[in-house]
Image (cartoon, rainbow, N blue to C red):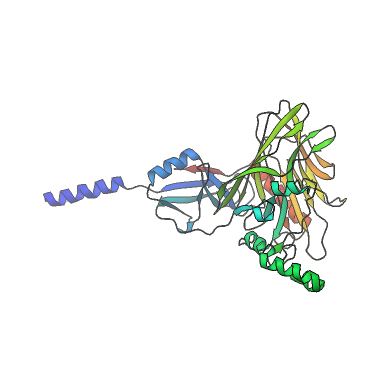
Length: 395
């Protein structure tokens, strides 16, 4: 009898010591379905979860299937949630060893290509230009967008193929004896040609490209040049984040204005999140987020009240059409959204010492967006989602 009582006590103590599963409840306040949208669990809650599950944890959906998550550089748990309109979903967090997750959002610096920083997810790719390019004198200010039509990473392979030293030597040698063969070989490895996964055919040059921001003065845009230094903060599997610091600018009476940008791209999203801060700026200054207009066109939307701009590039007969857009949340209202200075601009007031957060990105007619109207609908819906985020509670 005593032995049986002891066994019961041990069983009860063991049960009391077990870590109960946690429920992550995600609620959608909009009459729009939200598919594979990234949610964040705060740093304080993440710290408590890590302490509770010191040996590791997994997250499962309603069917008990494990889903990927990431702990970011700022100590948040992020995961993708799908929630129907005006509904909620419950995910379960419990003790366990997570499996190896496929890397979806990733990027790096490419010193072999004049210090490009290029990054991508399963939908789209981007790059920002670096100091080695600036040293050449080439003027390229804005973000570049690379079209892709596959979910797996492609940027690393594109650079490796384009910049292969042996192939470059072959091309140089052929140019002496057979220019046509040299051109054919160059085309076969160029990332400016679609070899089945997309290509780079977006033109940036001395513009804001696909959604860069710039301070303004009486003459217009004060174009930023290439970044000076960088730090990669997150590199997958679900989020890529990079911090960029730029060279000093002269803005009004301020001689040493330094811009810092933090850019992150999540799996499943067409748009990056960017947070900008200017040091040594002493007065409120207009700040524009711009989409270059490669040809005079009425194929754009600009809505200052809702907080977004969107543009459809001219159609390329071979490669289709690139679409670009930007969203400025209502927390940082726009003064104006309209074409100016060769761009579609979203103009706000930047207050010294503050953070300016917005979203920029693009899409392609050969990968999910058959028309400009499809893209504009995506941008309208994205804007609504930014201004009405999914709510997350952990119990």
